[in-house]
Amino acid sequence: MFLVAAVSFSLAIGLYMAIVRPPVLITPGPGPLFHDPRFTVLNPIRSRGPERAAESFLDLLRTGRIETAMSQLEGTDPKNMAVIQEEERSYPLTGWRLVDRHDRAGECTMTYAYTFEGFVGELRLRLDIVTKKESDAWQVIEYHRIY
Image 1 (tube, helix red, strand yellow):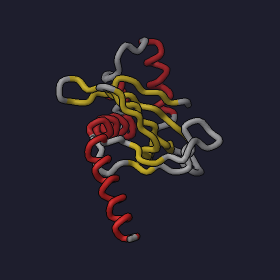
Image 2 (image 1 turned 135 degrees about the vertical axis):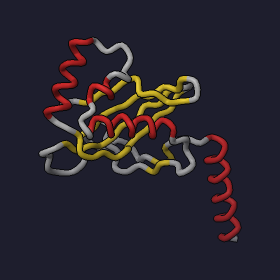
Image 3 (image 1 turned 120 degrees about the vertical axis):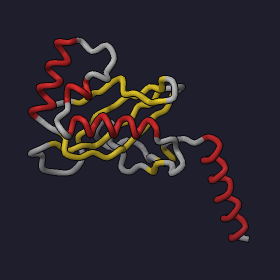
């Protein structure tokens, strides 16, 4: 009886994941900091297009191609853009991990835990990236990081 229930439950979960495809399956709630989930279980069959666009953007920043990365952003004030570029040079990213994701029609907001050069400690710092589907490709349209 238990085996039948377990198989039925597994099939129901699999069907739900295949049809609805939520990007995040489990997040037990935020921790003491903003966007600080204790752990996140991402859906293994989610659409990865938004994540690939965000990863490419972050990789441009990590490798020092800051102007190329920032040119993708929509409507950022040039004065603000200069500040962001200087901060990215001062605190270059060295690593990141996706910790949360929220999808809306044609848009996706992802939160990453990150480290930067000279940082010592756990991945507790957060940055947000918003992507938008344009034609058949995902583009980064917003980048938010507290320096």
